[in-house]
Length: 314
Figure 1: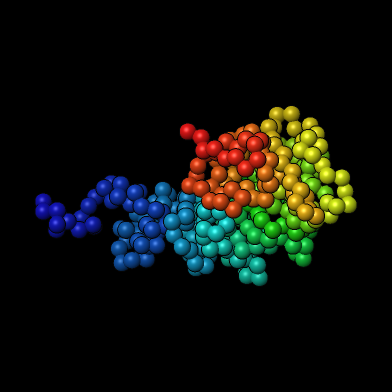
Figure 2: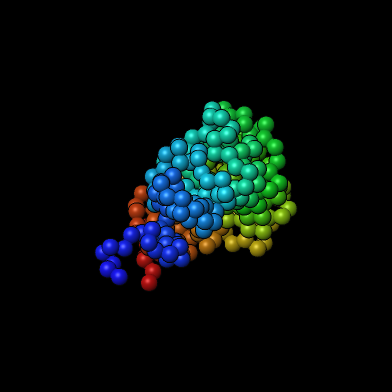
């Protein structure tokens, strides 16, 4: 057979599937669905292409997100940071937008916290795993107060910067997730009168999740009223985590002029960035790409107590 004359449709289905499996599912679906070939339409709807979609190599638009295949069980439209992919906006759009009766896993970047809440208002009732990267949170939204509990949700991950309403929005949301088994939080909280410590995390969050067996977190609290309160040390903060007997964690406090900044996080460190850290570090290994204003190519660093000393590890 002369290979230069072989047409795609001359190949058997088994060979076509081998070729298509090497492509991104999004490329297969939006290249083959709807073209004038019943055979390719049927192949494109194979479970291997429609059960899990990953948009990390494709720039998406609202039409793609709103019109996913009906058999879709997993959908990923997310990168490793907030700036990688377009954010989804759902606030003030019909509840039929981005809704599903079978989707069980969703990884997505939303335009704001309200858009995250809209996903949990009933559009995606079977959802068992939700991974969300979102942006600033303020106190104006009333959605979370009117939400129902989420008994099907077993795994939740939230990454958010510029949080100005942690107690009014994040804590009430987590209270609706009493059936969680895995929780991951990366939170940067601003303008809170006190640092988020172990007592708060245990009493306000974890004690309401009796089935939880995995808690990975990084919580940074910025306090601009520090001049009127005692400056807490790392040991002071860690003392409040004494009930976390099986959890290894680190605390870093930093007091530049007129403010206080507290970082608490589980180890090993599972996230990609640290900011506003001052010049005193714990003796642990970080795998980060963004470190207090400097970007690295996924290097592994051992950070010692010696101020501003960073050593790549081999």
